[in-house]
Length: 475
Image (cartoon, rainbow, N blue to C red; front, side, top):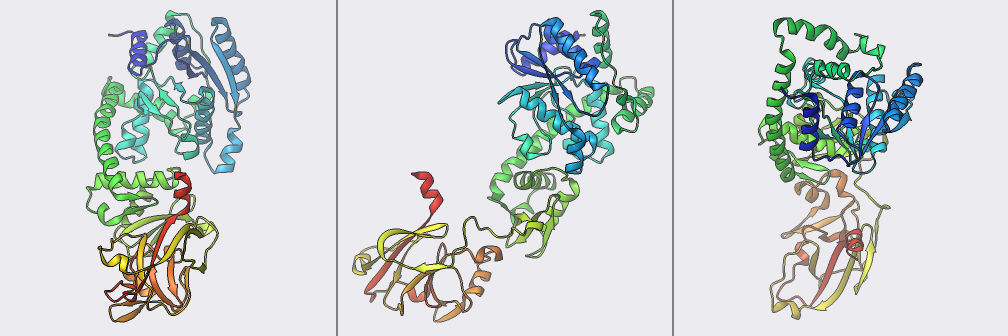
């Protein structure tokens, strides 16, 4: 059987951490963190710093901070104490004290570790077993039943905090509590006891002190069995997640996802794809299985059906897709990114001119130059027949009464947009080339039948549109 020192050294090697690499250890002064800090110290990890996070919840914390500082000072280990306002944060964000403490603790450790830093925690095999059972009791899916990973990225459920690019490594995850206690005794080490760990009002404490001892009566090796289950499930989860990530790239576009393609995916992959979509568009704080199922139901719902996620993010079923809109309470349904644009007279001088989020360039030319070649079908460049233009042309957004020539007749622009399955929230943002209320070109889409260049056409208007920001980025 490998010693606990061998387990830690092997874990650090697997994670590619050398003895001189900077690492930040969460150091509470409890038996597990004392064991980890002392082990790393004995193994010669000189890049280590220990950080005590003072949650501001217990009067004993001041004394614990002094104790942990003295422990590190005696051994020449770099040390710092970080104070966080757990109660205030919990009240301001509607969180439990336990959840607020976890979020702020990891945030503090991440900031201490710095950019691309590494955080080490003292989670061990019993913690892994407790985590699996805790998630099982909550009705978790496969992801939750995989437990903690030896090497992972910071994951608080809050997108703003998860942007801190820290790795979280758990070198003791294969070690049992008995090995930890044996190491402490062999090295004559003392530790601090946190009375809150005995409060069975916390579910994890109840699992540790009540449930697992009962299970151990039936199977003395229950901890190892539960850890083995988590490991087996992790392989299945990794495969399904990889499938979902590949599928997501094929069905997602900007802030929307194709509902028709989603329905063809296997259920296990589909829900993971929807979870990725939710994560990208609104984050996963307070998002549970019930919300993912709501998104799943939207796939089959009628156009215009909506569901609201925690935090107010609205998801709406549109033509063949689910779109992530703004927050309900702020009514940010519009796709606008700039000041509203209604229109301006079209200038055909061959120069670029602004038109809302776009810019355009138009120029009148003799049709003879086009008759010697095929006119290409390009969505943002068109050649329009000018012979039938009745008045000055405008580039604008839609107005009541707009129409477009279809075949030998005309059709309301509203009906054309509905037939083209253009989402309602986008219709007022689409640019039009208009001759009065006759639409010559729906920019990015069809042109009027009256605008086709014909054999007897004398004059044409060549017009090109492009996104202004995209062009600025190229420059």
